[in-house]
Image (cartoon, rainbow, N blue to C red; front, side):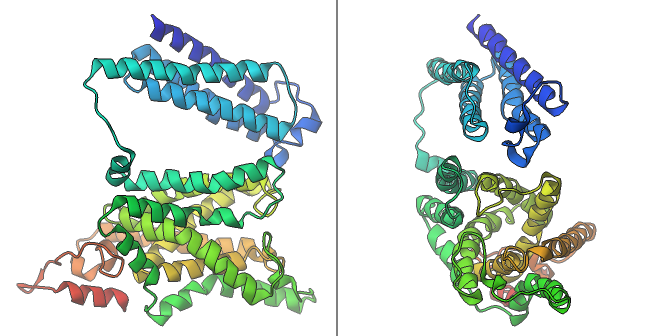
Length: 428
């Protein structure tokens, strides 16, 4: 009976959220222009879609789970309650308007969080008690643990910044993935820290790979030359990047490399990508990195030095560029097994699109990244359609340089191929 009551309550919340989402998206509700301008991108459609994703969908799922008596009822109730509370908190910060509905719906969210404890206790009484240690969860599922921790660490700086008005620099939050990778490796035990360090410290790679890391800047240089020839004054603008002081082009590039490049790539490629490629193809691994990577960027839309003011019409292009960037960076890491190489590529991409002088080159550079990623995905798909000797395909084999467990390659002419030979092939 209590489950059915919870299902009914969740269905009421879901129905009201669906009604509000449809009203915002299709203009069925009266919404003052002064409030609409405060929404992200100034778009009621975006607000309606966000309400559907954050509130309506979770509570619809909760109603179904409660009606069926699913064992995940406690988790669903807890998550749905937190999402509703979070939605109301963001609404107050963004819209800056108060109504009696906000504390009312906030108490509903708190009620669902509290009810989740009741269902958890009942579930424990029905089965033998088992104590689960957090460290054991991290060791058994290091990738989900890393993704959650990376987002939590970065958001712990960015969200207060956004609530305070978004006027701080966003750069400290960029270190979240690197710190999360280190914590997850330490908790994982064994040789996890050594594996991560080898990926970071491995800098002796082929010169052509470092040259490949400069391609984004070379692409932007074409646009800069055209603008300079047209009479545009670029002096001093190359050294101005949002979130950093004007310390000269080389100084800005160095800080961006250490904080932005290594801060992100130690986590996304050095930790996550290396593990995903043990089981997944290039495009599948890129998808599983791109999803949390996209979510990780979310608070930056409310930060001045991040992406505040980003036009809604350009959002699909940004999401596509992120996914394609995951493909290109992953491919480059496969080739080099070096965090330094991908960190340099990431930094050069930002220098080619985020300084005052190079912002105009961003569409051109994005097209380059998307085109390269599509070509790599095409190659990846074609390579699956024909049999090949794994010894001739280093992209699908763990390497000594990245800290993976060595494997014995298939025999060639009846003789096994040494692992060291395979590692040398990869470094060339």
